[in-house]
Amino acid sequence: MKIDVEGAELLVLNSATETLKQGRIETMIIEFQSHGNYIHVIKLLKELRYSIISKERHQIDKNPEYTNGHIITKLIK
Image: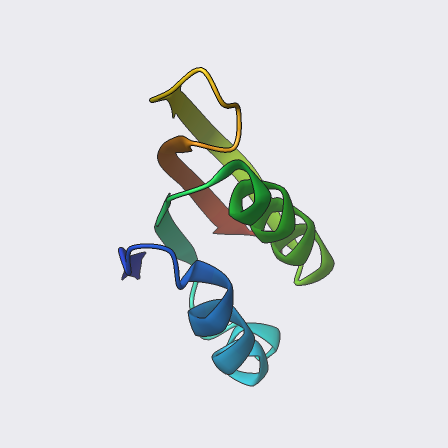
């Protein structure tokens, strides 16, 4: 599953929590739009038993909150 929702990553993941807990989604690519979202997305993925395969962040301004990038994750079985 790919999530690219321009800042609403947590909203999408929280809405899909039951499906993710059931193990129906094995791999995800998640684009994120801020450092805050990045931290919360990583925490939620670990709680849902997903391992982080790859993560890439790009700071787009001197303010560290302005960060974007992607996370690739896989369900731990």
